[in-house]
Length: 288
Image 1 (cartoon, rainbow, N blue to C red):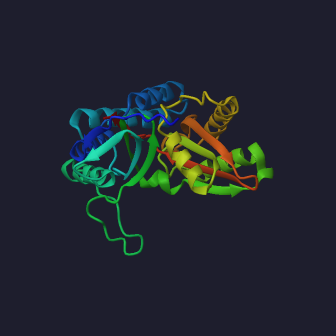
Image 2: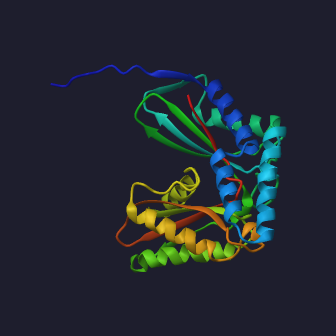
Image 3: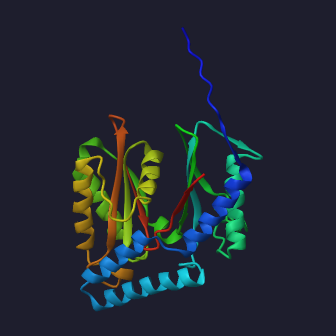
């Protein structure tokens, strides 16, 4: 016999979503997370290069000024990337989810005096409102709406990469691709960097995993898969042995962390994506 149950939907007004997104992007662009600041301070304590130490001191000082004066940490206030966890028992009233998010982005970049960096790929004409946003939505159990705002700068995004390796490349091939990508990036992504790696899935899913890996607290290692935790440690050591250093001026600290996410893939494929994040690792979240 089929048992029917009634689920009470939680109603969230679209205007509330817009208000939350506006606040998140302004805060993300002006207040650097405590995990990032702590990682930078730890980097300063172990950096051996005097020039590297001075760069790290300036980075930390800059983050403090931005927080106190409510000014952007970096002139590149980023492409607006949004990750959403939407409970299946949510009902949005007074508007539509994507439209509400994009209105929040528009307000943040306009009223928060954030640089609008989005343009037509061919004509390079600015869209004038930093739209469209890049929105990833996961439908999950429950009646909550979690929103993560992630402004992503162009300099670090430009040196990110994805590749379809052959299965025979294995772990060594993955490590080589990550190392080659970081070494080729050099000073361009404003090191010290955070390296997000996505392994498996499909081409586009590997890229999303790599970006999502950057949302993990800096230096928090993968606790789900011991293999990934081990590879994170190995890559972290290898990257810091490259000698690129803070701002690319040489030193011990090239990376603050390496974060890897993985999922199963097709038997004929081995997708790998590397998403590099500059030292301004910006993201803020809220749950409605």
